[in-house]
Length: 81
Image 1 (cartoon, rainbow, N blue to C red):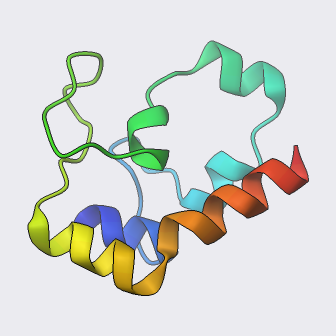
Image 2 (cartoon, rainbow, N blue to C red):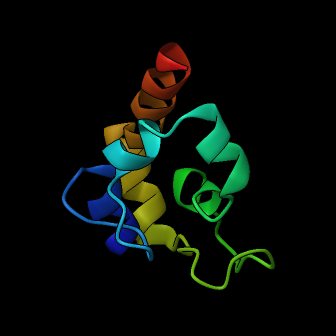
Image 3 (cartoon, rainbow, N blue to C red):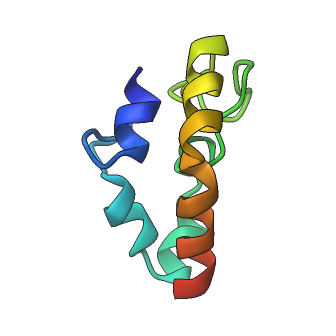
């Protein structure tokens, strides 16, 4: 699944940005760009804010849970901002 590859650093979001590139954005860049949010916090339903947002299915949720992928990325993001 594309969002899992994105979180593992092996893929890009719909705009071609890697997770590392998004995490390195300045506060100003984050404020002026909002299409990354659903990539950092993917949902199990379609986003009304971003047509390009990934949608988590049961398989992706199981992968996230098993690897605790999102937790580690979020902790790193908060510590570096």
